[in-house]
Image (cartoon, rainbow, N blue to C red; front, side, top):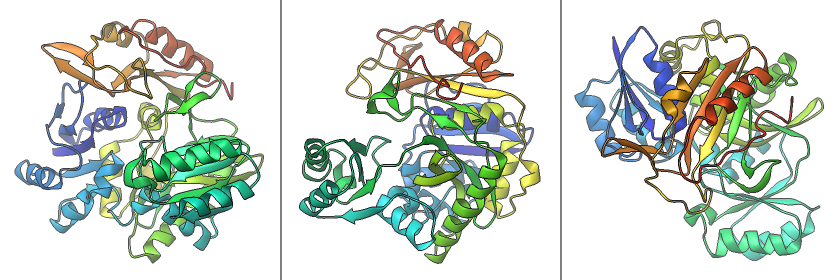
Amino acid sequence: MADVLVIGSGGREQALAWKLAQSPSVSKVYVAPGNGGSRGKVENVAIGFTDVVKLLDFAREKAIDLTVIGQEAASEAGVVDAFSAANLKIFGPNKAAASIETSKAFSKDLMSEQNIPTAEYKNFTDSEAARRYAKSRPLPVVIKADGLATGKGVIIAGNETEIDQAIDDIMIKKTFGSSGDTVVVEDFLKGQEASLHALCDGHNSVIFPASQDYKQIFDGDKGPNTGGMGAFTPVEWVTKDLLDRVNNDVVQPALQGVANHGAPFTGCLYPGLMIDGDNFKVLEFNARFGDPEAEVYMRLLDSDLYEILNDCASGTLDHKKVSWKAGFAVSVVVASPGYPGEYPKGLPITGIEEAESQNDIVVFHAGTDIKDGQLVTAGGRVLNVTALGATLDEALEKAYAAVKLINFEGMHYRTDIGRRSS
């Protein structure tokens, strides 16, 4: 029986831990640092996800058989490099390979090198040069902070005033800190977005069904970007032929590209795509499971997650081991008042047990904690209410009925998840 360590604190990590705990090969799942939803086989460990030394010490002390990177900042901090150097098995890209996410400038240059379809772009370290180039392109134009910005470092500017504001915020005011030292300015792409995920063992890849997430805070894709307000899978208009093309024209060239830079990619590679008819272009790469996409994938996955991730970490990924349940999975994110801006913490949460007593409902915690025996809010995205259904409409109906059973002061959520395609 194996002991597993999952690194991260959000809904994604809770979903991964939940699925790993179902494996007959797993005796215990530790989550560092975890959240208020850990129970049963899943236990929190009070170690931050970038504390390389303490994570390594814990893994050695507990003789952890497999460590799983959830939070991308752990890869950037060098956790994978340290574990690999200590001959500890770990699923996730090392720091160099994770640059495909942690540096948008590197990622765009890699796409150019590998002829991966993407928007026209240029990278800038000089704010005035970025300003001039952005104003020379067709509007709207997309301005991205180079480094990690918790899903909020992308601004679509519709006029010159908004271009100036975006450049000032990212490069001058340093809203995203050193992530804004470099910006990528790229052309706006039209179409429908889809999230593609592929498990990778450094050479081989297995692509998942397409999912779609909802980044803006309000219905109708209005308001500022968030880390994600909901998701569903599969996306029926993303055909098997298109998935195969993405694997051949995006995932495999990307794996070859990072390997050419001396950093074979092991982990979950997640290209976000803009799809227009039969054509697609890559918006960006992520080097880990999406959140809230992981929550719907873990509900629909019909395989042993421990076995699959262990194979990835061992370089022996077999596509025949990855299978999916029929039907659809959806996730609705319930957020704190004020999110994605400032929000209060410590608000008592009720109704989760009642929600989970409904058919096909699992509530994955994200920003929660236990204080004096009471479950309370502790983040912007608080809960992920997930449901399964034979149809997308059935899954959505179940999810929203469950959301209505949950309560905390000022909670809010989008009411149109899954409605772009249904």
